[in-house]
Length: 225
Image (cartoon, rainbow, N blue to C red; front, side, top):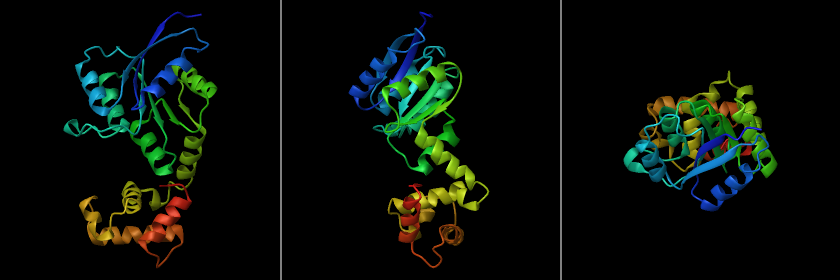
């Protein structure tokens, strides 16, 4: 068995979660010693990585998606930190952990970050967490059950304009309560283009003539938002 130490940078706003992950990983069957450097918000994590001069400092970076933001550096989530970590530690394995099960969010993480691991917290037990760790260490990628199902569902309709990034953004904004007339403030599209896209979305959801509330209701029904 190897006695190598695996250095992990772990970011979660719940210290107890980090302690739990450390405890679980210490039982890995590959014989690795686990050394964890913790951070609990975007500011601390960003500053810690910024000060690092060793691209090999960490073998793995575990990031929770929802974290207190650091607006000064435009670090608003674990997703922003993941992109920064890719630059700082190009050889490290990036693992995203999230409580979100919405297909749009998971698909966006997969598309934007292409992490080595993507796990929905409600999916995994201690055994599966260990399995994911061992798979990733062995240079394979790992996604948990909900992630796999959501991404497969999205890819099944990838030839449909509905999957366009702008359409996904429009649906997400409507779900957040943004009014149609205010959408041009959030997406780089004219109101006329937004209206055309909303018509396409309604066609996809079979709610012709429906309202924005109908779009959001159908999107939620499909698990997209």
